[in-house]
Length: 443
Ligand code: GUN
Ligand code: ZN
Picture 1 (tube, rainbow, N blue to C red):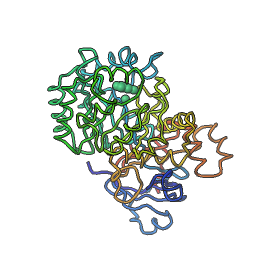
Picture 2: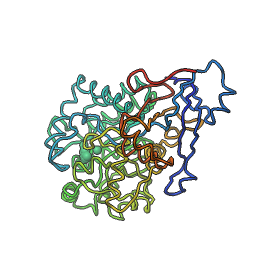
Picture 3: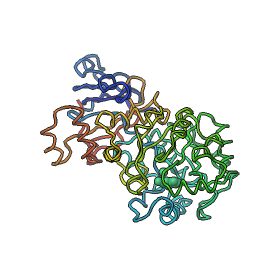
Picture 4: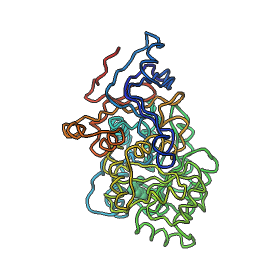
């Protein structure tokens, strides 16, 4: 899938370092009248429009998005494709929520009509929200992963997904076995991993739904494929943690279960990580694994408050994600806004630049793809979100009193949602335009 070729004129914002570690000034590049030149799906040049337009091939199409703000496409490092129809399920915490709503829903996904429709909906909704890469759990049915990858491939998207491995403590319709989980995952790796922009993630759901034999099989698969992503859940909820202690009495803590089977390593993504001990944070950081903060989910399910500063202090890479459908919004803007509120309850802060770093370059680093996505820079893949900070009457009213870019970004995440996304590009092709046709006069 060769990508698009065009130039895009807009305000351009991109991050190359963590604002909380390197300072805001040293972390980003902002061009008030910028031009991004894209060739065959990759960024060729980024700079002042005045300078770059002069040397541009006059046949090159220019999409003029001024005065909107072009940022790298958002990256959502944790969500569940089969949970688009459980969002907002009432009244339970994690373990009951899984049993009462989520497992019955996921049981439908062996049917290709169900999983194909979900994959089509999910990709379209992500793009409407400016999200160009997601790391997704499918279900235990291989069919669900086929649907996910086929749709992502059809649209030329950089997507990571996995067939869930689970062999206990769930309805029979969702259970595989250690051998089947291994074989079906291995077959999906052969079929999809590395095709187009796709990557397969080894996906044991979480310790409570896998036997030791299955975790061992997941570890063997991981050892056979040392470069692959691993995704699972860790330390989300007190009931879950107590259950893990019962099921794995030999383990000193929850993280030790995954360590024992070789599942803690670079590109291993651990959803939630709310109630970790210092030992666990240190072990995850040491192994170069990543924690993924899911604020709308953690608030909705009453799971707890992620400790961002403890993760930073431990040197633990941290992403931020929607966790659809424990999470309640597809919007990474809304996710950042809820992240701010969670951190505020911990006495921590998330300013505009730090948030936009997390949604782009930070999440790229958290998923080990910082060399290809998450920045608007030469050689990077041309995945962009074009953001309108004046999308609604309330935002236009608020904007009258905005003075700095930092403030504009913070208000955008606080008040923004999919209405803020004027257009989305993937590999230099426009894959979403707000209102259908988009505001895209060519030069
Ligand atoms: N832990 C294991 N499975 C899940 C899931 O589907 N959602 C959430 N939020 N936590 C989990
Ligand atoms: Zn999850």
